[in-house]
Length: 119
Image (cartoon, rainbow, N blue to C red):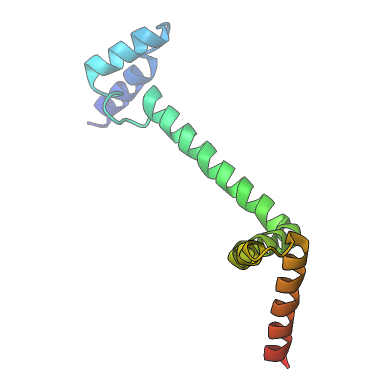
């Protein structure tokens, strides 16, 4: 029994020698040992490679964002505050208040409210 298993392994390892990629794939498909989800098929290796690159890219983007957090955090916070205060600026502009003065008034009022809450 052990000898027969060794013969099968030896035969399987030399079976693809001298074949082109297409011939080897057709041979494996006919035998049923490389098709339909086997880890050795070209399609599954391509899928694994694609997912691996996707995961590495995600890790890279996460690392860049982590390293740039000191720069990006104030920018994102300013964007969020600007979006939240935009309706107030539009209301003041509708009352014919210049944009720069509207921004100054809004920032002053928000700073006063924040100072009164903190102290």
